Length: 203
Length: 221
Image (cartoon, rainbow over all chains, first blue to last red; front, side, top):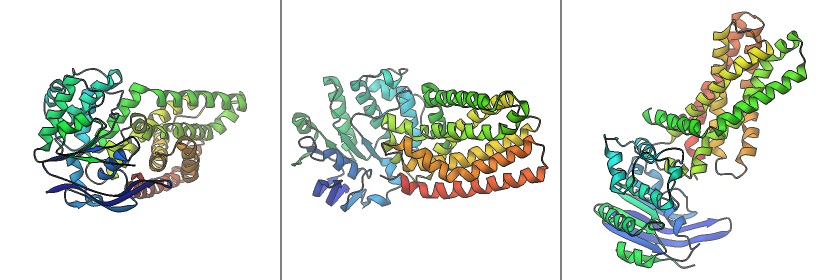
C-alpha cells in the first residue's frame, strides 16, 4: 500500500518556485531518502507531505486519502523538524507526556521513562539544559512512544554521535515494518545505510 | 475535553515557569494605575468616579500583552507544527488556548480589582457582581484575542497588529463591562446592571461560537 503519494506538486514562496512538478510515492515497508544541496526544497517537500504547507498545484495523498481529508489519521503521522521542537521550560518527560496526551494516545505507567532510558536520556532535566544531540535523542523517544505509520524526518542524523546514529537506524528499521519513512539528509553515507531508495533533488 | 484541559494546563505551567508574560502584565498594571492615580489627584470622589474606567482600561491593555502569550509559546519553541498535526478537528486547539488566556486574564483581573479598590476607592460591597462582570468581560476579551492571535501568529509584526485587531472588535465588551461596573459602584438597581450582563453574555456566546468554528480555517498555513 502506498502511504505517501505526491503527484505533480508545485510550490512557490513569493515568486520563486521551490518545487516544480514533483511526483513521489513511498510504500509501506519502504524508507526513501531525499538528497540534494541546501535550498533545493527538501524541507518544503517534507512539509507538503506532512500537510503543513499547501502546494499551489498538484495532489498529496496520505494513507490512500487526499491529504486535506485526513483527520483521525494524523495520529499515525509524525513529522520531526530540524532543529527538534520542544518546550524548553518543560522537562523531557513532560514534553513526551504532553505529546502523547495531545495525540490522544494513552500514557502508560513508566512507559515514558523507559523510552527515555532506551535512548540514553535520564529523566528530570528541563529541555533548555539539553544539548542538540540530546534533543535528537528525545525525538527518538517520541518516535518510540508514538509508533507512527508515516514518519517524516528532516536531517535526523545531525548532532547525533555514533551510538545515537545506530539507535536511529534501528528505530527507522522498526517503523519501516508496516510503515513508511521519508527523510531529508545531506549525508550520503547515512542515506545509503538507511534508505531503500534515494531521490536526488536538483535546483 | 481532556485535550483542551491538557493544552491549557500545559501552557499555564510553561507560563508560570517562564513568568515573562504574567510579570510584564502585572508590572504594566502597576505603572498604569500609578500614572492614572497621579493624573486624577488625591480627591476621593474623583478617584472613585474614575475607578470603573481605570479598571477596564488597565485590564484591556494588560490583556493585549497577555494575548501575545497565547501563541508565543508555540512560536518561541517551534512547536506550532506539532499542534497542527494532532488528530481530529482543530476547534479543540482554540478552546485550549482560550482557556489558557481566560485563566491568565482572570488572575490579572483579580489582582487588579483589589489594586483599584485600594487606590481608587472602588467599593467592594457588591463583590459577587464585580466578579461576574470580570468573568463575562474576560470571556469576551479572551474569545476575540485568542482568535486574532491565531490569525497573526505567523506574522513578524504580530505583536503590533494584534492589539489593533483585538481592540477594534472588543470595544463593545469593554464598554458594557464599564457600564456594569459603574452601575455596581454607584449602587444602581440590579435590573440595570443585569441588562449589561445579558449583553456581555450574548456577545460572549456569539464570539465563542463564531471564533471556534472559524478557527480551523485561519490557523492552517
